Length: 333
Image 1 (cartoon, rainbow, N blue to C red):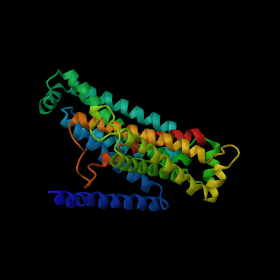
Image 2: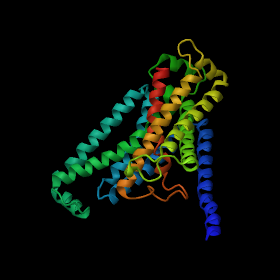
Image 3: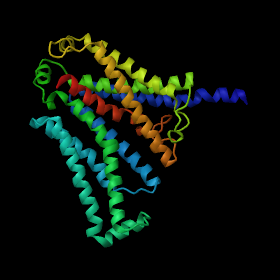
């Protein structure tokens, strides 16, 4: 029996390693293609938004919380169109955020009002969803569930759009000056985002499994969450952030940016930034775990062998995207 267990354990890791390698190749490929056209990476982000949104939506349905599917898929498309408009018309990232929030408000009003105005059709939808409450509460609940998916994960991931086009959408004259001088803020931000998130996830898993340690005393977060893994994830993000600084600081245009009199970024800036990248990444992971425990599932889906769903890989990254955006505003605006 012991030999069987030992033999089967490595086999369980192969699907995870292979699928992880494929995802890494796709990501690196998109970074190279981004040099040809910035919007290639937007397509990757948009695809991530759609897949993650549908995974969250499916879990909501398992929890008997119905949503309107069409708006869930429409919001990432509108976000993609919106970032293209903002980047090409001189609008900045504040416009993008305000317009995105306005779209969600309009969506909620329309989704809430439609089943009430078309009462007969709304009643059929209510029966189909197996909803026992009143028509008004049904319309409100289903609309709120839909907006929840638009917010998490889609709206949070949309900050990666802004990061990708930070040089074009910034309100800072300094950022525009260095962008024209060859600094690709989007590349720097996206590399920081993905490297810190991947390092945080990897270090959290390794330290949690190898060092064990006391569990986080919240049963709803699942049995695998430990304080050791949490701290390890933050350390991993710091390591990743320092590596990003070392690489970009060795490149002429970025070295000039980091050492300019008005900015003066040094290794300690990225050290502190890495800490917060880790905290935000771990917060996203913990919230995701809480959500999955409420849905009584281990993974969001089984689309990626050995990893679960795409949302299982992006749950920390999408919250980290919000911090990297804030981090760039603090540094460059």
